[in-house]
Length: 448
Ligand code: AMP
View 1 (cartoon, rainbow, N blue to C red):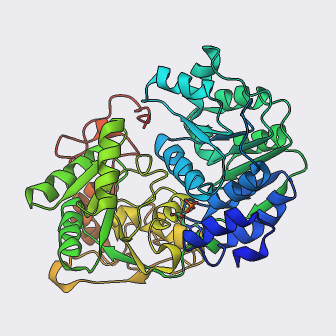
View 2 (cartoon, rainbow, N blue to C red; view 1 turned 180 degrees about the vertical axis):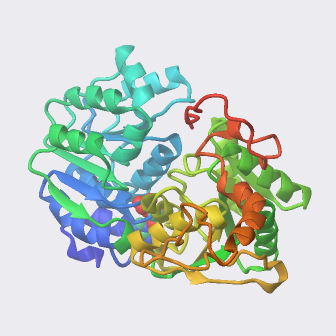
């Protein structure tokens, strides 16, 4: 129960108003420590309730009578605008019975309007590193009196190339008394370095991935012969599954556009989100999805970051995500707060080993599902190793019993499916997103 936390009654009133009854695991673990002023390193995914886990203790610290604000007391940095906007909303909802004011600084918004907001000095400043630095350079931002610093989705900020900006902003807060760093994954050496530099004797709370996968979400795989076959399966699922909102994940922009085009042609109300869409498109897509006018979103991982849409109960992985953490991130969008969700991954020959390594990582076995109306010929490898990966896929062995012929006959099909375009590399696929084009030089991952 939230009332067991030593939170101010006005915050408990807001919590009750929002119908939060039971704290989520990350809230139960982080709130008491954050209230004590401890530095925290928390590994927890979006959707776990981590925002409230840091926002409530921050508000508790700031709560008091109405007064003239003279300095920014809390800085919350996040990787994307949407995440920043959602965090602002969460702060406003929890602080509705207090005098605490929060402000937002993100790219894509009017610079001068932001500068005017900064002159009024919010208690809590929320934003993305790039625009924060611009405001800092323009002399509009003073962070010297910041007491609490939050780096949310720190792993994403590093992935997106914000390491230097984040470090500079951290250095601008020399008087901070508490720092909390949240990441969806345990991260690599960059994150470890940041943790060592930024946190003082932190408590590490690990509530990520495996333990946080929503138990109410069923996870299934459906095997497919090739991308066109996957499209048929997607069509069947969208037409026959019971869902209120669905998201279809692809690894490339080209494929996202292709699927979106197909859906629109069938008069589905859908939206597509990927790195080439501008802020207006993204906001419109998310608003429509939230309002329920649009039921289907086709998205790449980066575009879907920070997305928090209620009632999203069907996730289709057209392409398998590239890591277990990414999988958890995608699936974490459904089955939230105890609602049932369904996650379906479409698996071609070339996806099998990735799928099985994700199963191993999650220590789970996905339910194998067949839909007779759209059943193909591929049904998984004939033989699997103990690891679950396909046996004997490395090299086509010349088998004394003439199996070579069989393998050779399958080869064209196999090539089609194993040549999946690399992550975010639309330049490697033809316009229809199917036939791989000749690789000219290694494609740099498109920044999304
Ligand atoms: P977050 O992981 O912070 O993005 O939160 C995901 C969603 O869960 C948000 O819409 C929150 O408002 C909601 N949420 C967070 N904590 C709780 C809770 N204890 N009870 C119900 N809903 C919650």
